Length: 72
Image 1 (cartoon, helix red, strand yellow):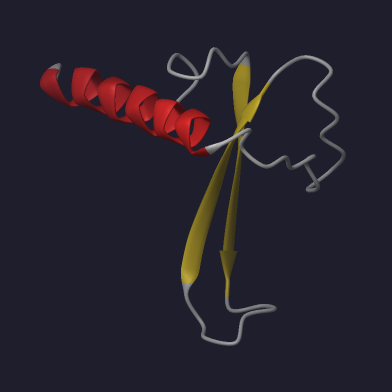
Image 2: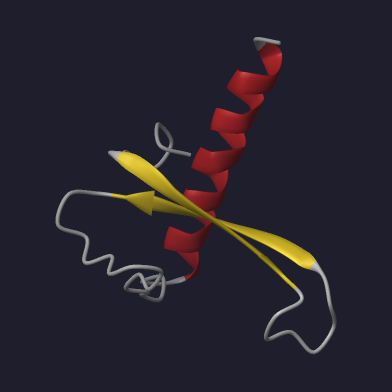
């Protein structure tokens, strides 16, 4: 994810049960960049510019996953 999105690092958070209508476990992996505005657990969120940007991010993550998987 860091390589695919040119991030300096990442923030990982795991949540289970609390504040959920259906208890489950989920994990947030948030790309980090210097000066990105992360404050504690709250990170600034922004919408994708358009569907094309969303597709580009998706494709970059898939390619990075495939490179990592093929190294195993």
